[in-house]
Image (tube, rainbow, N blue to C red):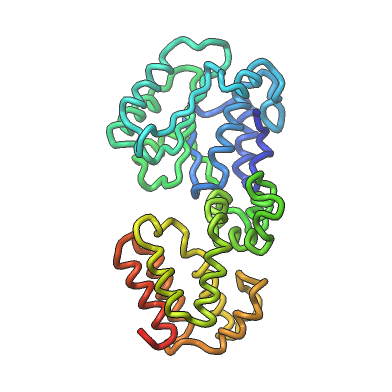
Length: 327
């Protein structure tokens, strides 16, 4: 299905700029959609590409019903290319294939549109090859680079593109997107857990969606440990971090709990993330560890930033028992 530009939620400034490009009929040949991962860049790039290929685009982008829109929706539009890494990085042969494709005569009078996602995973050789295309782009071709970390892109590539910035979304927008997602709706994820996923996501619906499957279980487990330590349960949880157990974002729930404990212990009453757990957290907040909840939060935050390694599990064990003066 071809989506309109309005399908991108919470990025009004970026969408307004893209609408001006379409309305004026003056679209840069190189665009850089930049911002945090999971905030709508790829969705916007696809909607914008559809608007460029559409024969009757309106204020909201593609019409969705013309021949080109139907071709694009079927995945068979010959003038649309979506380039994503076949392995960990975009390699030079993939960029060379793109350059060769763009050098050929177009299949119709519509422009050619290529999306590179994520463009910040190019090898240096691939980046140099892409730079040549950006310096001398074929007539009627538009390159849309989707990048999560523009700081690692070659400065010359960034300078050759018109930048379209995307920003983290408000918590309410993230929660709304999650609630409407087909994998989230219904009773599968309680409302408090959806709200927590939004709050710990950093404004990224994509990140929030990836956290949801384990967030409720991790929150319940850590709440029990933080309010009444069981040595056996603590060891069991620490053991679960062996091997593939140290998944990205797994400490999101405990960090939110310890943050709330730190706020409540210092007299804060409003800005806690786990509002539905206020009562048990308030009871635990008045019984801080020897170093205090604020120090505990800083320690857990430091552990969360460590790459996966055996020492991380040992530090978690020390953290558990240190909370109760048994470290």
